[in-house]
Length: 435
Image (cartoon, rainbow, N blue to C red; front, side, top):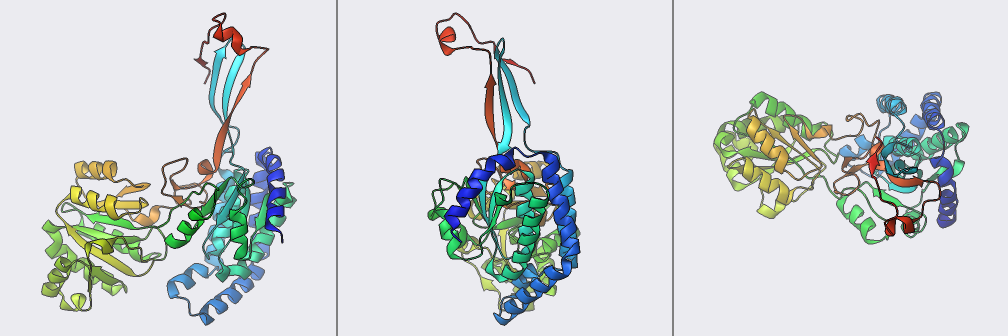
C-alpha cells in the first residue's frame, strides 16, 4: 500500500465526512455494535492468535492483560458505542453569533479537525474507541495499533470500515496502517494530515514529536501521584491508593508515587506497605521511608530499593510504587509539579482548605480529591471513549473526547458591505451578540 497516496484520497474525502449528518454517523456506530456481536467469535479467535504469539514472546503479565479482548471487554466496547451515539452532535454548534452591523452576521461554528493520525498501544478496544470517536466527530482517521494485536485489530478494522460504508459514509474516511514503516510514511504527510495523536511510551511519543512537522497532541508519560494528608480517613486512603496502583497497573493513570505527610508516617506508612505487599506491589522509597518500615515491619523493608531525588521522575506501568514523606501540602504540590507529568494527581484529605489549595496549585490535566487516579478516562467522564489523554495546554487537555476532536471556523454573511465604508467612517460597527 502506498500510504501517501491513500492519505491523499482520505484528505479529499474529508469534506464529505465533515458534511455528513449526525444520523449517518450515529448509524455507523450502531452498525459497529451490531457487527461486533454478530462476529464476536471471529474477533475472539483472532485475539487467541495474538495472545498465543504474545505468550511465546514472553511478554509481561501486565501487557498480556492489555492484549486480551474477551466478552467483558466487548461488552464495554458496545456500551461505549451506545453512550457515544447518545451524545449530542459536536459539529455545527454555534459558538458565537454576532451582528457586526445591520445585515452583517459573524458566526463561529464547530467543525472537524480533518485528517487525524492515531498511533495507539497494543490494546484491541483502543481500535474501537479511537475509530468511533473519529466517526462521531466527522474526522477521517489513519489508525495504527500495536503489532502485538495485529490479528485482532485487522478483524476489528474490517468491521468498522464495513459499518462506515453501510451507513453511507465515505469508505476513504478510515485507513489502517499495519506495518511499522508506515508510521514514518504517515509522519511525512504534513500537507494532508492535520493532527497526530500518539499513545505509548515516553520514548515513543518523543520520537513522534521529533520526526514530524504535523502538530502532535498527547502525553509522553503518566507519572501520577497521591498525597496522603495528615488529616484524612486512613481506610479511605488505603482503599483509594490500592485501587490506583493495582486496578490496572499498566495504564497511564495508575499511581506511581505516594507522598505521605510526616506527621502520620510512622502509623500510616506501615499499614500502607503491608496492604500493598499483600497485593504484590514492590516498594521503592526514600531512606526515611525504609527506616520507618525497618522499625515496624522489617520484612517490608527487606530488599526495598532506596531512591534518590531524581529517581522520582519514573513511570513504572507495573506493580511497583515510589514512597516519600513530605512536611505539608505545599511540599507535596512542589514535588508533583517538579516530577509529575501533568497527567492526574490526587489528594486524600478531610480538610477543605488544603484540598482547595492542592486542586488550585497542582498543574495537571486532572486534579482529584479522595478518589483514585484511575478515574482519568474518557468513558468514565461520559465522553463515550477517548482517543488519548493530553497533558498539553493548547486545544485539548485531559481525556480527549468529542470536544477535543473539533475546531471551529468563522462564517460571515452580508449584503455587499465593504471594508472601505467602515475605514472611512461612513459606517460603524455595532458588535451586538445575538446568542
